Amino acid sequence: MQKVKLVEVGLRDGLQNESRSLPTEVKVTIANLLIDAGVKELEVTSFVHPKWVPQLADAAELANSLPRRPDVCCRALVPNRKGLERALDTNIDEFAVFLSASETHNRKNINKGIRETYPVLEEVVREATAKGKRVRGYVSTVFGCPYEGEVPLSNTAEIVNRLLEMGVYEISLGDTIGVATPRQVKEKLKALTREVPADRLAGHFHDTRGTALVNAYVCLEQGITTLDSAFGGLGGCPYAPGAAGNVATEDLVYMLEGMGVETGIDLEALCEAGWLAEKQLGKKLPSKVLQSVAAKRRKEGSR
Amino acid sequence: MQKVKLVEVGLRDGLQNESRSLPTEVKVTIANLLIDAGVKELEVTSFVHPKWVPQLADAAELANSLPRRPDVCCRALVPNRKGLERALDTNIDEFAVFLSASETHNRKNINKGIRETYPVLEEVVREATAKGKRVRGYVSTVFGCPYEGEVPLSNTAEIVNRLLEMGVYEISLGDTIGVATPRQVKEKLKALTREVPADRLAGHFHDTRGTALVNAYVCLEQGITTLDSAFGGLGGCPYAPGAAGNVATEDLVYMLEGMGVETGIDLEALCEAGWLAEKQLGKKLPSKVLQSVAAKRRKEGSR
Image (cartoon, rainbow over all chains, first blue to last red; front, side):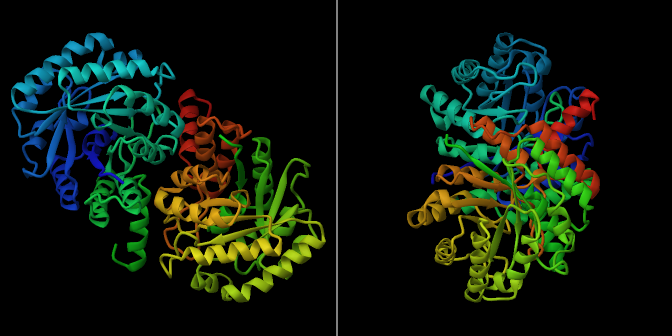
């Protein structure tokens, strides 16, 4: 089994979809717990307008309160040049841009068509690169859209190629609403990796219908070894009712370690981040491993 | 993709682990909802002593209240000849026997060593067969035991061979405490199917660590196309604290249909069984599809 790179997106993709906002100091504590557990790459916030995502309104303050370690990369989502400029004033290590493979979802999400979005992202990538910063890309609704249903793979292929041309170093393919099944993932990735090197792609699966982990597994089988996940299984999609969180980092790590992949993550330490988030959000998080470790600890009387 | 046979075990494996007992008429309604949704094979109860599983104390009454349809098979678990005799007085179509691949788990579960269990099961199979009834077998803790940890595959192989010799027609391999990972499933099944025909085996996965669906997927990849599941993801294991339910039938069906496998099950109709159980048990069930269909219905104002 090849090496697998895990990208922790809970603080951004997870928290932006929670109705309750967490205080900045709690987010900093969570980031520290994640890093202590062995997480090396974290997406920590988003510099979109606070009107749209009030839960991440503290982006700049958070970015400047994070631990700075040479072995850890903290990333922020930026929607446009304005967001990038706010982010460049902070200690954030790198950036991510996003658009949707579905025209309707892209319009609902960022109020622009896909083609009109390219120059906006191009400007971000150019400016970030000029400042010596790397940019990752997200393509959402690759496996299905709440408005358009099935999304042709050609949309994704075109966007991926455009992003690579702009200088984006890695592109995360999102099952934003959690509709993908293993066959679809296998077929789409098989086709896509004929055009694009697998090491430029990542899998980003939501668990709305319970298939996130199996889709991540199929991703690995197709040679795509970078996977996004959220601690606790936090997350969702504000434009897709009932959409669930990202695949849980804990469950993914459990599966990977059981497959002989060294993730470098200490599972019990990782659970501390999820338990803190549960306390702060006032609800149970969906990660099965988080719940089973908690049950074990309760039985041992230590929690 | 080959045909997949689904075995619905929620009314037995699910309910035996719920603290609240459901009234017989509710179980009958659930069985009818499952059958109306297209379920063809159901394990409905267990004729163990009511002292051990009070939730299934109504086994005989339930068995005689179920719809009798030539295209539907209703099965009951029987621990021994006494259980079988109680079951033979009812309308139950066929039976299942069980033992554990781990000596300690077998002793805790049925108060006998593995070898002492064989003659008990032999008697059951002989008598059932004489009455023209088929017997299925369960081997639990195949992928790990709460007491012994890793369980050697040779234990399982020996038990499977013994059960086949007795005349058991199909053997369900249980990840009773939900510890299995895809590599382990792949390796164990690859080894086992060198000795035993794949069409005599079934996969039975619990979701304690979120891996049940991916393990079911790996099972299919290994040519084992009979899968046990529980509506709503009901279930657990009374001897394994924190152990979660079976893989949810809804999530499994969603995955299979998306893979082009015709299950014959109407997913929205199937959800009715889970929602009724949620109401009666006073809690949400873990199936992701159940929750996402409910969210969609709430949004449409129909639930």
